[in-house]
Length: 422
Ligand SMILES: Cc1cc2nc3c(=O)[nH]c(=O)nc-3n(C[C@H](O)[C@H](O)[C@H](O)COP(=O)(O)OP(=O)(O)OC[C@H]3O[C@@H](n4cnc5c(N)ncnc54)[C@H](O)[C@@H]3O)c2cc1C
Image 1: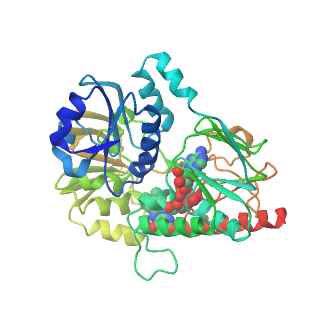
Image 2: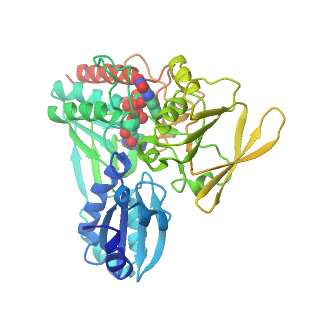
Image 3: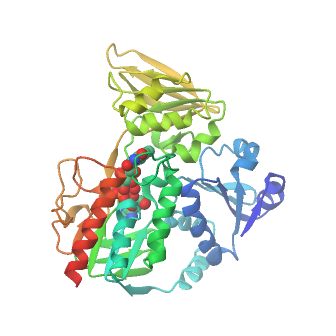
């Protein structure tokens, strides 16, 4: 694996044969999650394909020329031509493997796959998800000397690691950078001795057998499972959103706001996330337009006050996005006035979408009793409808989704499990 800068691009990439190029940024959790997969795969595929990294912040011109609009972005080259399609955002190991395999003859792919040996490991408890809920459960279980493994497709921290500032977590007088708060939570749990399997692909979850398969070849079994998988941002569903995701449309302000220096930005949403993240984005952007479907913001009062007094922020109430298209370097957001149905287009350099969440339960949805919004129902011990399966944090059916409430759920589940396993 090699790190280059833009002056070496022609030699190393365009004239470099088969190459996979990683445009990464600092303070970018999905970039860090990708780094370990990239390094791991370079050991498997490195003889056939060159693995190259490039720091996007210091090579902005090249990134712009190649139309790299999101961090991380993986580009695949063969003989100077881009092949295999781009990958960006929260990149799965399986998708990288698919792209790499498509660059090689099938016989060689078989030889590489034969080098991977399946493994099985046993624990008392598997925790799925290393956000505040999962990390707290991991800490309490570890302190109770229960052999616990935390599994997460990303790096530890959950949503907190991409929240720019947290001002309501008890114990800190000053607002804390979300990244540092989640780092400290994770280090505390790790130092206690909880095993981490993070930045992995979750291939399969079998709640009845209490078995999780990761990266296709690694089986992890336990007596109990704690589901702490949190939520994923909702999509607007407007045409163009999926196509432009990672190419001008972002769901992570800490990852992409820094590329909006002196640029114009559209934010879709009007709740806490939309308004608080708009404030952060406005540190970089020259102008920011919030598009909100209701007649009032639904964010907390303090955040609203700051947004209203921020002269870079303009708010369009009772409007919804109808389509997203590209025009050269710009993103054109067509919005509809919900009162008179008139449509107008806003041209901007980037769009951020913060319009609510859905529970991350796709891998085990059928097995659990859910509420009407698709969140997992639990009892007061955080036990789900399946014996031995607990759920904590934002993924469960509850009224208030905050760090403190996720941490409380994690504590309760861990104490209930410790008592049962005693
Ligand atoms: C922009 C923003 C700002 C916020 N600001 C605040 C604030 O200031 N104060 C506050 O108290 N709260 C805030 N919140 C809410 C808070 O972040 C959440 O309530 C809290 O993070 C929930 O913790 P969790 O552990 O349940 O889930 P998450 O933090 O969502 O973590 C879930 C973890 O599970 C992983 N995962 C997903 N799917 C799987 C799978 N299939 N298998 C294994 N792992 C999986 C994810 O990668 C993630 O790491 C904010 C949220 C956002 C989005």
